[in-house]
Length: 358
Ligand code: FES
Image (tube, rainbow, N blue to C red; front, side):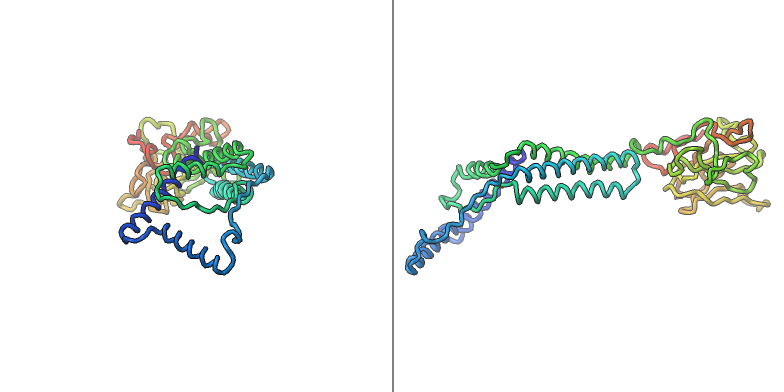
């Protein structure tokens, strides 16, 4: 099907070129280039005759070799199928990790390289090698395009496993096309992991060395980083900011009553603007006479959030509050999540940003 389509395109191009040459000839009022070629060919023949070496003695350049090389055909099919496998691997890596650009590049690059190798081997050892002399008849015979189509269609002769190679090429083409299109899914949040986090009710807080946090570890005026016990710390939803405020200072939304036992608050450490780590903490030690609320600030573009008000955005381009996680202190004094985040963690796009904060 594809070969036939290509043949028709080539035939059309040849016919168009012939028409242009004829038009040029008509405009010049002279003979068609084909006619000149015939004349010069005749002159050449004449001169050859004069020299005593007629056209019958000239070496006929026409050659047609039909390779019969099953190994090469199998190799081409194998390369194409391997390319398809790598393209599928690209999609798998994209869906599973989504972030490993080195693996993604290796998979897609390897797939394209294998397709190139298959094309080279096919060109050298599978496709018919032919040197032909074009018969010059009347330019633009009505049936000429059809003849060219037929001639090109016959180019597949000699490929004894043509079906296999066609199949392999289709599989490789489909897989590589899918691999090229798969990253479009990144435009939306469907294939990303940002809607899921390892935090759910009962998960304990650990520090970056895996040591469990107790409530008394969290002191007023300091900022702590916590991770979910037993989960992948590399996940975008894993890192937390944990801090303690005097309970009298808290002004959490009414729906979050009980989310900060003994004034201990937890927020996602990932800035909802462009996913930098929120790492600056301002805790005024004495009244400044102005806005002296404790504040968390992202160092990238200075989005500033108020922990006492549930992570409310005070300033900056983040566009939404810092996602808050409800905290629980278990009977042994360990810090645990009392549930999941109130908001999607990570940078804001499309439907991640939500209009309401309770
Ligand atoms: S990434 Fe935090 S303010 Fe831009």
